[in-house]
Amino acid sequence: MYFTSYVSRRFSTILSALLMTVSSGAAGVYEFVFRDAPASERPYQWLPIVLLVAYIVFGIIGVTTLPWMMSGEVFPLRVRGAMSGAVFGVGAGSMFVFIKIYEDCLALLNIWGLLFGFAIASFLTALLGIFLLPETLNKTHTRSSRVSCRRRNARTARRRLYPRGLFPDLGLGVLDRVCGRWATTRVAKIAISCDSVAWRELRYIDRYAL
Image (cartoon, rainbow, N blue to C red; front, top):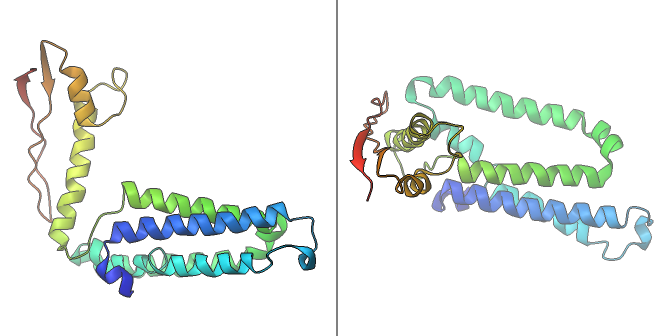
């Protein structure tokens, strides 16, 4: 909690998830390499314990604490109570289910398979933090909504301006450089007016390529 109070939500999520990926992946590699050796004959017997403790500690600095904190920062005020309760319910229910199916997963995947699964889930969490997670630290809900709105509008502009079969789904800057070779082209300038309730329709203007 202390760490996430002073570090941005996205950075703490990405850092926490990547460190969890490394620690759980390393523990999985250790268990896989020495899977046939008796536990008493394995070298560095302390290493898996250290890696698992590190996995828990790395999770505390971001991944395991931020969902409980951000539910009160992301949702609008009119649905914040209901959605926060739903988030807590889904989180508690998921933990209950995962605890109950742990032994079955262990028998099916073995311990190294479970650890690799944890590493994959942690890496996907890092991707979530990089591409989707909004930044809410020291920001009002209106500002957070405005950032999310801009991202949606940028994606909509790409889909409207560039046919899917003609250009790959690249950033607007890359596509503008490609289209700049044409004598005259239609490019996007997004005029966005966002508030906490609604956002205006996108507008496009014509300009000549340089």
